[in-house]
Length: 335
Image 1 (cartoon, rainbow, N blue to C red):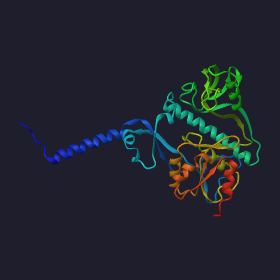
Image 2: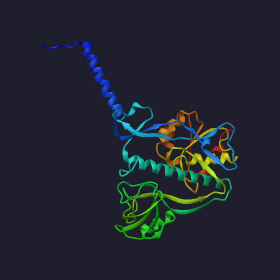
Image 3: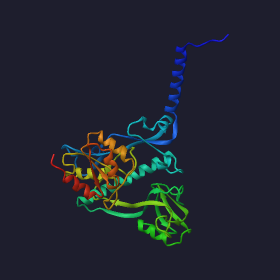
């Protein structure tokens, strides 16, 4: 005897199966990551300057981050399911030899470096004496196809090559190029509080024929001494992109009218010489700023064109250094 299900039961069974499949797709992580917009956050609660004070007028300085997590299978199959999201391969988020925990630790070390540099730049702009003793070459990124891949990691600090000290970025370039392509170098590295030596082979620079490289993008590492205490606590936010916003807020707390009554969001990796470098996730950051009621968004020059495509009525100002950012804000129309 065969039992025939009614159309209603067939539809119900099909819907239940669809719900189960959707739940599995929604809960199961994929091999990709997803970038999502977040709201702009005021910097003022995060900064404490000895002898300074929190500004009380209108306006304010804001930083913007993005939410980064493993994409679910559903998000991978339907990447437009979340507004403003971007699906990215793992290699754009972390080294193939890095776990999520290692990447997180590196992000936090980059954030700490950006805080120290931001304080130094701001106090220097305010006329205070700041000393910065070079301590090595800070690894910002590693070419996944280069000899350094899976050996050096972001946030490592290169301190020597073949026993010769590396204090400045120029030292690293000079020592690497002193040997022919294909040479093996003994590279001293500080990773967190540990020191180690790695053997790395040089290859030809694809952009400069015949020049040896190990395949890293580096910034200046330094031991920074300030004339008084500046504390910046960003909690669990990682990465270097809030440096410009931190530097602007430090000046505000020293009594400078930096925002001129505007709600100002800023993003950009700031260096000891005051230059402002490009950052990632600019589309999501622009969308987040636009939805946060911000008046002005300061972005690195290299990110400005893409930011303006997603800005709507938000005013985007491109800057290449800290002084240019201050000038741009000072010359805004009176509010």
